[in-house]
Length: 100
Image (cartoon, rainbow, N blue to C red; front, side):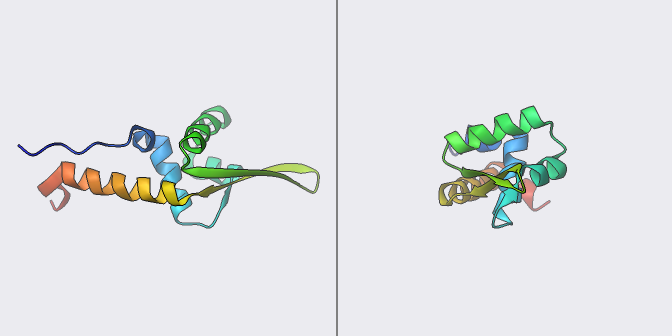
């Protein structure tokens, strides 16, 4: 049996995988948009985005727009590579089941 591929534990979390997938399709995204798309709570979403930020997979920019705080996230090149590698490893792990 061939060696099983490693799945990046940072990407492997359901919400983190969803966040990276969403961010890979847009230039940037506000916290509120990500919350609406994932239906996550503020606390859980913030914690998972922090894990992605600490891993270097996303960047965060906080600013004020019309006196209201706005937090914007972007996927980094490292995040894009990690997501692509995760998908590749998952396909390898699933093998023929992917085509079924």
